[in-house]
Image 1 (cartoon, rainbow, N blue to C red):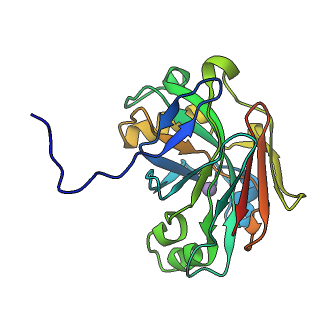
Image 2: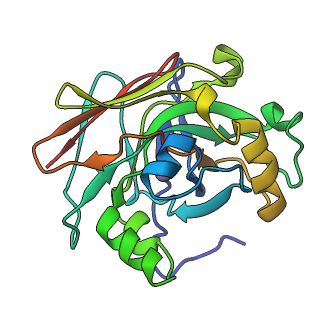
Length: 236
Ligand code: MN
């Protein structure tokens, strides 16, 4: 029997897949907090290797801003905040679900990789942090997840090193290397899959390096990771 909904279900967010005409359908977006030591320090924390911690962004088409190759996507400056921050991150796309995945088996669950931004209303996040409240209003707002095309792991191989950078209006703001991840991609998948059953379509934003900072309307951010399609996003 065909299911009849009381209104049209929301559209699924899709990301381009490099080398194909098909889209990757997004389910959830899991984000890792403080996964580069120098960024943990700039946020006021000791970067000792505590277990990874996670928060989520919606995976819907209001949250995800797909950025096609060779284009500049536009997204509005969000409401309420006066301190809107960029966080450049390696995004891992899950192609095969599972729970209790080992780090050794993790690559078999990866569909591919992309460049993304964990956009943050830093003032709201900090206010919630100080009050011991959830981070959603700082992290999970509309247009908070601009993400570029996904390169398939079959083409790239495992990505464990390489430069990760973010320029704002042509000026370098963030610069590091994926080797500085405290928890590697495979270790992150292993840990996350003990907490949630991963499903095809899930994305993992793996954390940002140091150099986070504010952007305002009119500024353009260009994010790059070695071997992946760069993204360009303008705040309007
Ligand atoms: Mn982040």
